[in-house]
Length: 114
Length: 111
Image (cartoon, rainbow over all chains, first blue to last red; front, side, top):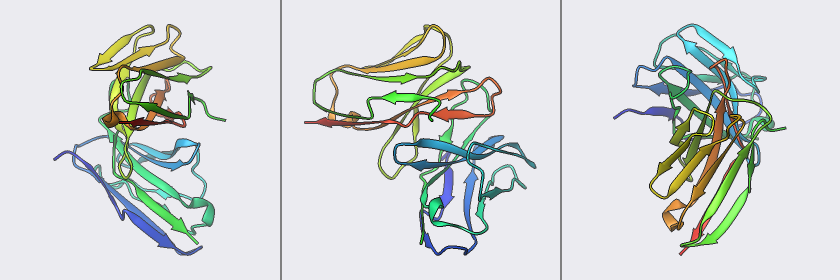
């Protein structure tokens, strides 16, 4: 089944403790992206990747890192999480970042930083 | 400030009523997509509109892209409880690298 898989689904952590949220897709998509979703703000793009070893900042990249060593995986790293990073995170992928190439989303990771 | 403004933010209606959700911007987009998101899940694509003035129908849902490619609307005819969810519009910039999402319209259709 074609899908984007994120892990974990839920994560509670403390300020400053490094964490990684994994994202994997089995559709051979070139384009992958991370978003955070906050009430009243919709989905905001954190980072995106056009292909392996190619990553770039989205609208809200501060406090996050990503890597794209393999086509299928695009982990999101929080080196020193802070409470303002408490949010619902989504990973998405598509064949290419062009029109008529919809984003396929994972089921989300709800992160709480205390 | 959101690049794409959606209205209304919340909508609670009775089964059988019609409704329209609006997605407006001062920016021009290469395409505009509508997604629906249910609790505990990621957004799922409903439709993509590409050409200015384009109208697409998906059963009881009608989507329109503005002539100037800056705005879009979603009209639902005879809403059903199964239509309940968060509706998101997303515009794709001409650099093809970014999608800009609206803040969403939370629809509740009561039986």
